[in-house]
Length: 254
Image (tube, rainbow, N blue to C red; front, side, top):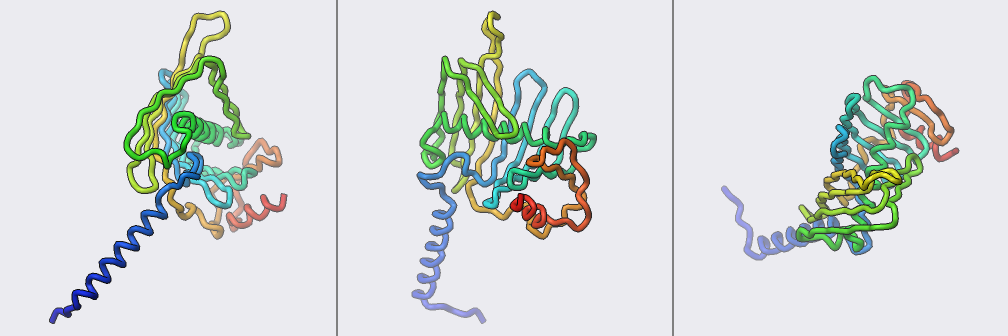
């Protein structure tokens, strides 16, 4: 026999459900203080026109200052794929990347440089931040005299003026912003005829709080480790039983 509930009870349940949904949506939304670089997870697709280089990265930031990256890169000299974990900006761990040499620091340079480029271009295109983006909007910003410069602490990039960025951004769901950007910049040497190069960037920014891919108890056996802050030039295999918590503690103690 089916149990019957009074209409007032059903109405109360519906109201509570709507309130919970509203709270969830509110917590997922970005505020006016949110910056483009505050994205928790960034899915980034980058194509260097005419060079044969294409990169696809998923990057996640941790409140503890760690950065995780899933890497897929195609270049004329081969394909790279694997995972990277930068702990406290001091130590780099890698897994995968078959055939990669002992020095793994170069593996993190392209993902972090392109991540900074995407955030910087978005900030130039829409300075009010992701909260200002709802319905699809188009952007077109140019600069004739000042070079576009990047510095991640691990790598630098200079894109000579004149440069121009065209593209669009839109909200796909609560807490998500999608973007497509075409970045064109000068690539001619002094005294040569004017030439340009271009980079196409697209991706998704997720501003939701999310659990980090690896917990502190994670056993890092199978990873390689290289202490950037100690100027190590070669990585080594992580010993069995070493956890992410232990690596974080050593980084904090330095």
